[in-house]
Image (cartoon, rainbow, N blue to C red):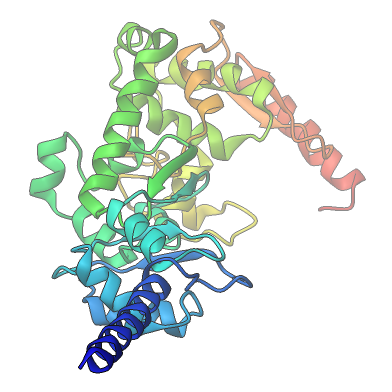
Length: 343
C-alpha cells in the first residue's frame, strides 16, 4: 500500500513539475525571437485578438501562438476590439513581458513632417503615409463645412492651419485628433514672438497673413528678400491696387507644370487670380514657411510697389517705386535672359 501511495505521490510530483515547467515556459521563457529583424508592431484599430496573434506570428514577432494566447488570456489582455497602436518590442522577450507591454499601451511615436504642399488634399496624402487613417478619412473631415466652421475655418482657409514643422504623433491618431493637435500647434505658434499683435497691427487675420505669406513663398526662394517683397504687397493692398501675383494665377488654373505665366493664366476667371480680382485670394495657394509668415509680420517699411526678377540666375529681384523704374528693371531682366541664352 505504501508503495502505491509513494508511486502516486511521485507521479503527482512529476505531473506537477511538468505542468510547472509548461507554465514557466509559457510565461518566462523567450517567445520573441532573439533574431528579431523588425521590432515594430502596428496593431490596426478594430483588430480582434486572433488577428493580433496571427499578425505577431506571421510577422516573426513570436515563435508560439498557443503560449502567447494562454498568457494573454490569463493577464486579461484579450478584449474586443484590441488596443490599437504602434509598439516597439525587444528580442528575447517572454510572453509575460510582451503581453504586459502591449496591454500597457506605451506606444512608439511617428514623426509627421509638414513642409510643402499646394492644397490640403496633398497634406492629407502625406500625413496618411505616416499615421493609420487613410487620406480619404482626413480629406473627408477637412471638407466637412460644418466641422470646419466649428473650428473657425473654411475649405479655402484650412491650409493656414498647418504650420510647417516636425511633429510626434501616435500612429493610430484619428483624423479629428490630428486636426485638434494642429489647432493646438497653430495657437502656440501665433502666441510666440508677438505674432498675434503684429497681425492685428496690420489689420489682418492669421489666415490672411498666412495667405499673403503663401504668395511670397512661391515668389522667391531668397529668405532675405521676403520682408521687402511682403512690403510691396502690403503697399499695394493699402493703395487698393491689384496684387497681380503670378503664383495666384498659376494656382487658379492648376497649371502647376508651366514654366511661364501667359495671358491664359492672368486672364483666367477665378477668385484666386489676383490679376482679375482685388485684395487677397480666398485662401493660401501653398503651405507657407515660417520665414514667409514672419516676413509678412516683420515686413520692410518702404515705398516700393513693383519687383522684377534680375534674370541673372541668382534668384534675386530688383524693386521699384514707379512703373517707369519697373519697366527699366524688366528690360534688365530680358537682357540677362538673352545673355544666358534663355530667350
